[in-house]
Length: 153
Image 1 (cartoon, rainbow, N blue to C red):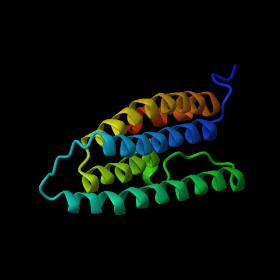
Image 2: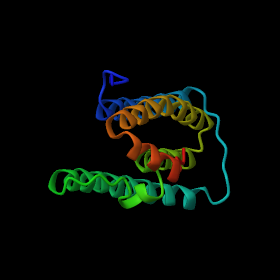
Image 3: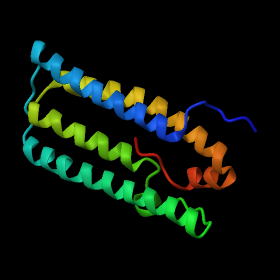
C-alpha cells in the first residue's frame, strides 16, 4: 500500500504549528494597524484558564506520545488510549488553540481572533493529512480508535 503523503506525521505537525505561529504573529501585527477591540466580562479569568490549561494539555499529550512510543518499542504494544488520547484524538492541537485563544482575551483583539480562526482552518487541513498517514501506518487499529474517540477541534 502506497504511503498517502511524502511527509511524515512529525513533519505535518511541525508545519501546522508553524501555521499557528505565523497566524498569531500576523494577527498581533494586524491588530496594531487595525485595532478592533472588544472587552468581555471575565476575560482575564478565561485568559488565565487558557494560559494554564493549554500548556498543561500540551505537556500531558507530549508525555503520553513519548509513553506510546516507548511502549511500542519496549513491549511491542500499540495502544492509542494513553493520557488525553483516551478522550481526544488531537489534544496537542486543542492545547495550542487554547493557549493562543488566551491572547485574544488579553489583547481584546478581534483581528487576532480572526487570525486564530484562519489558523484553525489551515491547521485542520494538515491534521487531516496526519490522520491519513496514521491510518496508513496503523491500519484497522487506528480506524477503530478514530471511531471511538472524538476529534475536538
